[in-house]
Image (tube, rainbow, N blue to C red):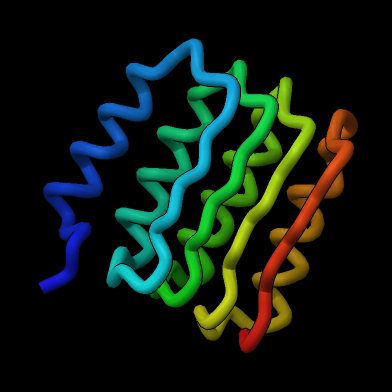
Length: 122
């Protein structure tokens, strides 16, 4: 089965919420069958880390769908200290509507100095 099932992703989200002073996070979740609910829960957990200045997240081929993609874009957009962002959403069959939602959510980030958005093969 997948490394991150529903129970494991819930536990990871709970652990992330406790890391309140975290300033930098690199989260590699690619090629896990997370699905939209688990991906969204993890995104909301990251959104609670208000001190994050640097975030790198690989969500390639995680089946996060429109719901999970939107949750992650909104999570990133809600991080007030975020200056560096790397967000990998490739290989998720998202389509142009989701790409637009992600772009609009990230467009409001005033403090960003460095962005890498990967949406290949969508």
